[in-house]
Image (cartoon, rainbow over all chains, first blue to last red; front, side, top):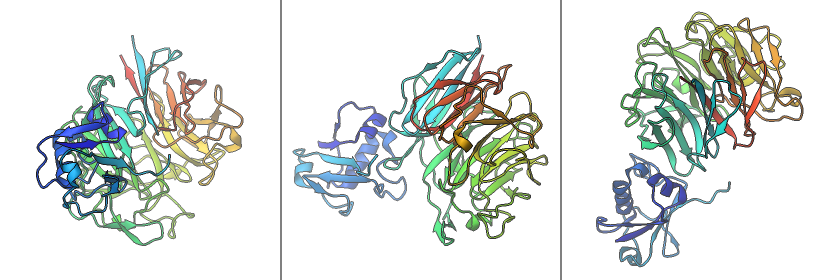
Length: 100
Length: 372
């Protein structure tokens, strides 16, 4: 089970109350790509909000954090930290801080 | 009993304002899509319960919403707006070429004939169509692929397709306007397009002031009984055409400024036109700090200031291009919203005005539905 923390706007869109969601069946190896694949499969209304529909590139003002590290610029197919894979730590999807 | 529903898109959510036909007492909904920039919300002309909304965010991109119950509940619909093929380049602010990139949906235009068909005008400028109630979208790419496309350029707000007008007498004819490319018309349902900008002059914006394309058209309006007549608020100048865009003439007349964004036509008087002048391209607020709607009952040139109920001192708001609309009750109602968050309504064609919402976020769009 992979734990993912969603920003408020995406929770509203996905109609989830808790800031953290639990994803089952994420394809291994667990990477940012497979986690977002699983999010979009579970919550199809989030397609296009985290990454581009076609290129699958992360939207410029979305960032990925985990284990107190910024993983936004790591290769999308790099394995995520073991703490995320085991469910000890969540994978954070964050709207970039840019005022207003 | 008849009434009206005013759909207000703001910088931080949408609001639905309702009233009976007297249009004196108003109810304002809780914010919908709170926190999101709502570029446009509008309803189907043949099914008033069918609403479409464009929700956009610099962070999370474009989201589209549809309601089938007049705005009580909403459903997320398709948000994939993919240009046909390799989209090429257009002119950038500095004159260099820049890749076409989708950013957001500015304007939605539900079909006059089918509630499941809706057009979307997007930035970077292109026209999309859905025939399945917004589930999927496909580009009418003949517009973007017009040979002049590399000469189109963004206005200050981006290179947006902001106006879509269907000819009620000819389903194959559609007018669109793009800032800053100009106006275009199709007579074959969107396959091919013709620039219709003859008569526009833009000496402060274009090296060739009467070029075929490149003009910063801010908004077009049409009365359905006269589909060959269009009114235009351009960057500077208020214009009209009586031959479906083949030729335009200036009708700014005695306006205190011919710069502005919205333009609207009275529901029952096709020669009665409304604009909201602002001071200039750099000073986006009313001249003299007086918020005045100007009405021409002669199709232009002679304009009268409408002020009764509007602030006449210290008003420095703007009215954006999609933020004015008219209802079709017997006494035509006029509505507009400001960047300061006020929404004003006139139940008598502009003679008197009421503040129907005073403290909303910046108003991006105003549409009105006349309910029976």
